[in-house]
Amino acid sequence: MRVVECSAITNTVKELCITSNYCLNDDILNALREGIDKEESETGKLVLENIIENSRIAKTEGMAMCQDTGMAVFFVEIGQDVHVTGGSLTEAINEGVRLGYKEGYLRNSVVRDPIERVNTGDNTPAVIHYDIVEGDRIRIVIAPKGFGSENMSALKMLKPSDGLEGVKKFVIETVDKAGPNPCPPIVVGVGIGGTMEKAAILAKKALIRPINIRSEIEYVRKLELELLETINKLGIGPAGLGGTVTALGVNVEVYPTHIAGLPVAVNISCHATRHAEAII
Image (cartoon, rainbow, N blue to C red):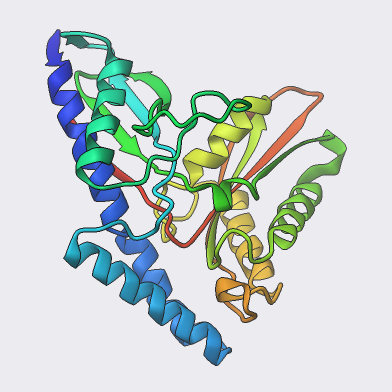
């Protein structure tokens, strides 16, 4: 049994909060650069160039790449041979968020109650998804999520008879309806299967997979490529000003489901699809 102190978790989370908000991931940057060559609109090319320059300034100057530094979402894999000491694991993560958002000068965007709307002042609590795995390590992935794009996400309980075509239709309709609101070019995470909440988690988790890595399942891989092609024909374009690069990538995750259901969730993310990870 390996012992991990809560203080180590807090320090790791603090650094992840800052890094993820300052440094845009390489897969996204590469897709933006490739997008300049693919984009047919001159305005669209300029938007993409400005996004790349913005990310460069954020990294070199040590500042947030976007004013919406998101609600902190975590995917935490806990090895079953790990024992956490010195306090609560959840509180250790939240303390890391408090410190990271303060030290990184990141905006506090979380309200204590969804109706009363009083800001917590430290961007906590985080949204944490735990998974118990084999081994004696803890893997922590942070995915700060801004709500310009989160608000454009959707979930639908399709009928099994709707099949793959029904899934495609729902994804495309969701992106088309979102239009310029999620700050395109976007990344689209799709979750298919499970239950209502499982599909939503799958869609969010899909966003942390590098967009240059396709699914290992053949029909899913084909679906990802087809959806990306169709979305980029919608004409929304960079910043919603028209063009051929509306999405940088589409990632789809699937899970077994009930014989009577076909849950589908679409989680849209802006070009600042941020994520960072560490293993303790």
